[in-house]
Amino acid sequence: MTKKDIVRTISEEVGLTQQQTKEIVQKTFDAIIESLVRERRIELRNFGVFEVKPRAARKARNPRTGQQVDVPRKHVVTFKPGKYMEAKVRDLDEQEAAAQSADTSQSSDSYQQEITVEPPTAHPPTDSVTERPSGRWDTE
Image (cartoon, rainbow, N blue to C red):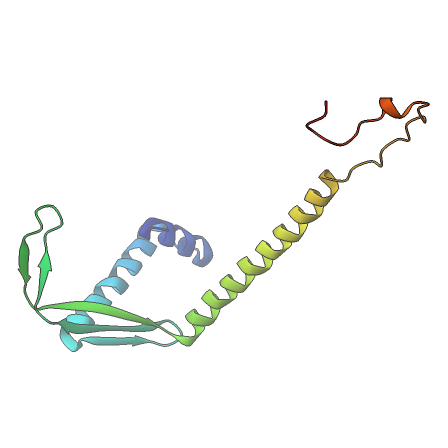
């Protein structure tokens, strides 16, 4: 989903034009960014917590050349989802697991139906013993 998709969805639900909704969504994102820069933490109830944390300097390796590179200390934004978001995502996992188990049981049922074999028809008895296969592979 993109910002444009979010704008379209909100616009349809609220009844504003997409241009008005786009401005509101952009102002919201700008406010989040400004709060992170200024206060280094923003908590949105039932959504999650954005936080600016320092990442220590480290040594890394250039994958092309294998040469060691110094990566300087920097600040990164972290996100910890709220309880409501966690619960919704967990529900998604449970729904997928239920759907997968339903698919598995259906496919195993259809598999069993596909491999059902008719019982062999009875062959008329033969008079001579030599006409019957011996069951040995090396005598034929």
